[in-house]
Length: 318
Ligand code: UDP
Ligand code: MG
Image (cartoon, rainbow, N blue to C red):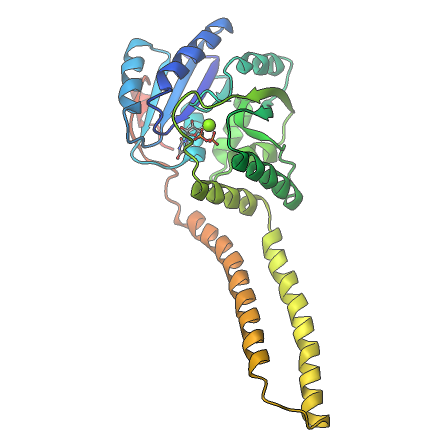
């Protein structure tokens, strides 16, 4: 039987919170007065997350479990959840209860008013380090200054999308997934509900600095070619001045006797230019890497097993 609402929860090492998350989600969704399914995507956790969820899914038929063969990343886990969902509206929510499940009911209200995407906008963030808040703020500002797609600021992946939007998203097969950007890109009638982001219920953030940088680069490079343009602007600018300098050097050589071999300037210029060239190569490499990723055409994720789905659906591919 098809449920009306699907709630997608990506999990990575969330053994400390996951059963609370299930309880809270169940309480909230029981209040919405319609059928629902809870889709938990286990993104290669190394702890007891999956055992806990298997147990819960044995008890509760509305709980479905998609178990990845390894860690594929938060954005891919969300994508898989959407692939395995069947509801008329799909809600994506983090496993750590930082996004209060009660807000889902407000989202559903907006959806019933006819909006096809309802995203949660964070008014405040409790219990996150100053560093995280500042970097997140800077990142969202930088991203919006660089892209032509309007991606709402201070918005995570906590959102409700209509089945139509979900199907369109499933058709976008790019590998470097920045889901919240894609959701903005597809358009449709969008609105927001504001909420206060809570502290993590338990456990630690699964986004260490390295993953955050990776995530930011994915966001920027999949929605903007500006870094490539910056590369050519910088190149142009530098070439202009080096051309002037070349004139000056030639002038000295031809018209003056003041031609002391300038070791310092040669080294200086070399260092400067090597630095810039490497930087620009790096930018180009970022994009080429992405072209490479797209062209390999591997599946986005590999599923070890699913639970709670009827037999023929188990065969469903990504
Ligand atoms: N997550 C995931 N795979 C990962 C990292 C994180 O599925 O590789 C999940 C995690 O379990 C959580 C959500 O993504 O449900 C957001 O992660 P987290 O709360 O650690 O990020 P933060 O809120 O600190 O940005
Ligand atoms: Mg979190």
